[in-house]
Amino acid sequence: MKDIDNQEWKGYVTQCISGKWPVPPSFVSDKNNWVCRAIVGRVLYFIKDTEGAMRVLSTFINDVTPDMDDHPDQGMCEAEHFVLSLRDIAEIIWKLTKNCDATVQYLDRAFAICREFPYRFHTEARGDIWYRRLNVLAESGKLEQAVADAEEMVKKEKKESHTPKPIIPDPLYDAVNPYIFYSLRFLAEHKHKEGKTAEACKLLAEAYDYFPLSAAGVRDVNKAKATEDPEEQYKAWEFCLSLQYLPWEKQPIVKLRD
Image (cartoon, rainbow, N blue to C red):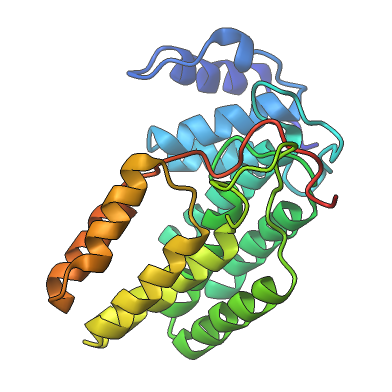
């Protein structure tokens, strides 16, 4: 883990604990703990200190391996801290350089951990990482590759699902799969940009078969499906996309490999 002097560290910590959204000092106090560095780096990025964020995140990201057996009932695990740090580095690289290869390299590292980690994530990271990767490819002129990757992911996941399974069977979660959902969402958004709104709506209708829905979510999805005009239906789907009706992963769950 790369060194960072105490004075510089203190300055970064001060930014984190005294801003508009202050972080508890205990979360960011230990300079020698890479998880603290991860939190500090991500907070700095959130408050738009991009240079400071990259400085802190780069001190550990190539030297640390997260404990894949760390899975607390409350709070984020090491794998999740690491994945989100990789995601933020990817975002910084993309915004500053538009270097697709470098950006995707970090997103692929994050995605590999998402796939390997056998326990619950407390954020949306698993699907969001994949979705961001597809969009970076598309925005960099590699749309055909992004579309092919999304279609292949849907095909693969339908054949052999990695869906988290609750200890007690739950129909709200049995079919949930963020990789299928985000792949279909990406494909739908691409179709809409091409002016193929009806096709986009069909893809989103299918996507929501893999999304965790509350009673309100079922109501909104059914309303979207019942809307006849494609443009109005797409607006209804956009409303659904603006809401996360239930957490992606139900707690408690058994290992995802089980």
